[in-house]
Image 1 (cartoon, one colour):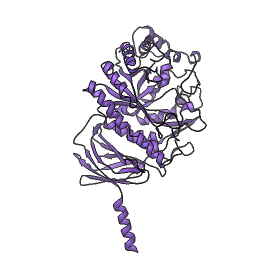
Image 2 (cartoon, helix red, strand yellow):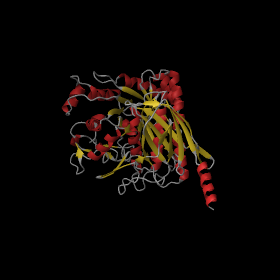
Image 3 (cartoon, one colour):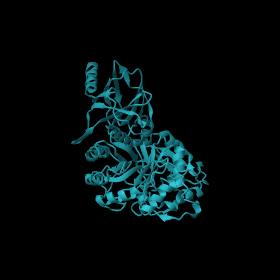
Image 4 (cartoon, one colour):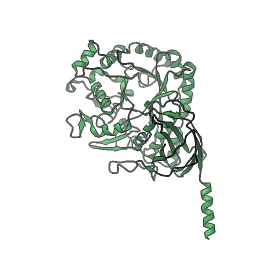
Length: 510
């Protein structure tokens, strides 16, 4: 009996799936633009009001109206760039309504998101205060849909000019003497849809017109982002590159992950899902690889030097809203499934570092695939937050090619790669290898050859959970959080480890 049991155990062990990997430290690639880890904060639901802004008179601890707990959490992410004020909201936002004494600012109806009254208490000055408090660069989205060329031109002057000029003097009168830096500016948002339902050739001309009046004032040079495609609309990219490619610095791309792939019906629950929904979510999110290749190929045709960056400034999971919440607020929970989605997409972006210059996950707080959830004075960090924190070692590092052979994760008649990987070397010479196991049931053995790297130590952290649906709540805020990983071993130039089921792992090799 003992012999039979031992034989069965050995048979099971031999059947365990395995992945092999070669990390080419001797073939450094492109620098990973730190902006790949960008964030997005729209006037949508409780992202701004309640999530970021509580007002100076709030009992919630704050700095000039901005929540202290949120500031501290975001500083840990090393947020490189923050996109604001939208989204669809940007093309109905008129910036002059959001400056001056708050009690005198006119209110508006947020027609896109829930039909609620927007009091404009969080405007230009408050946004730049937030950027300074968390140490991030500003990515401002201008109003093309319902705004004017003059309005955008004057906003740029208000934000970035130190001249003795009308808009600069208006900024001074409102309490900010020195100009801010606006490193990135989008000329409109989703002009194919909520930003104006334009044809690509028409928008290309509008971009050229508006962009002409976006001035670089002394001390500030703006990276101009044209409104790009919705998902796989390559015809839009073709028209924009052909007609306005020479005028832009970046071209946006928006793509969301829906478990059902269906915009018109149910998108699926954020928390009540089975393995079939887990699988379809990951299958759909991996379509980002095809989108990056298709749009990059068109951009290469018009811009072989890769001067124009691909800016994926809206991405992430999109589920049905939390039951009982305002459906226009796009509030959803965030599980281990979202952590895996984040890891997979960040790997794709890094592995296309030669073209992808920025991405901005949607959104930062309380909306869609959020980093942070708040409820009055309570705050919780999501599994997605932890992936961004673990991966911030890749920001600004040099990408290192990885050659991966992975088993498949199979559900029914469909399959996807079970393991995803990316690697980089930072300025201090440390090599970081990140790995994702998309299989929620099965650990996978990974054997890695280190080419051009002699590592003496390996340390790591892993994010995993016992169930696919595990998440952090206000009652249990630490249910899913990174833990030390001690299962990686170095021996004769080889790295070996067992990657837990449904996990995201970061290793440091020195």
